[in-house]
Image (cartoon, rainbow over all chains, first blue to last red; front, side):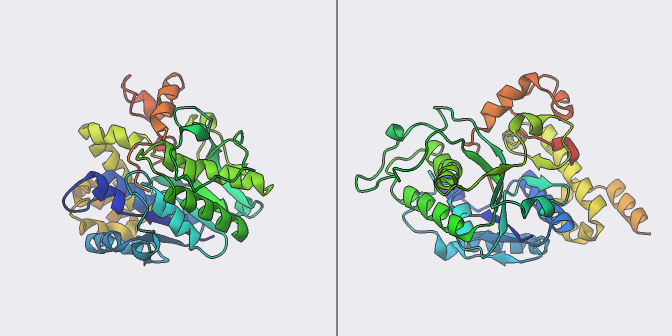
Length: 296
Length: 42
């Protein structure tokens, strides 16, 4: 099963000045996500832009994507897309260009077992649905859009949005319609707001397009079940990233835990990770000794 | 994908206060930023 990660770097520069970087905990979960996908499910690539491509090359971690790094977002994302408001637009452009059934996977999402058998039964699979809350998913009257633009009147505003951190699409026509609708919406937004417009384009339009085309949406789980400690299949770092950014001790503990897991499960990564200055501080002699013993 | 924290994730984390998993229990009550799931699987 083919999957892709995506990383459009323009939103970073809408909020930061200086050199591009990715937080260490994000890098480690990205690596774990890519390697675990290959272990259990298939091929994975990174779709990014030139800055992203050069960053991964400089770090020396490009090999974690066995299907390579594609920097086509450099050219495919339309220049009129506001990276502040539509910080995940790259994901939709990356999806649009994929051929055949594919999984769209966030870099902070890790899958711990094979899902292929279940995925191929469905045209559209997501990790879970989301509730419609006014502050996140308001009605059409809250959107400030170009006068010439009109959202499809046959859309059902009652259908629950999808969380798209893990999404599988096995219907080319649907994929084309969803990404076209989302991109048209992004191009016709007049306001600057990084919450309601992005989630509408990415997570609500997918459900609306599916409903309009009578496509069933299979959800692996619901939020309550996912947060219950008994589930062993999915990890989504999600809002925990905010916690890690403001809690340095926990950040270090989390990064060491990720590093140990990567090295235990993929010991061939040791040399690569020792060469990454942003990450090698999380490798200690005890870890190296354990990995060497396991390979002896 | 790099999230800038604008998804409704904090909303979920607040909801999870009453449904502590193993990972959340480790935070000794400081749970407002704990908004992920399956973290203990790492």
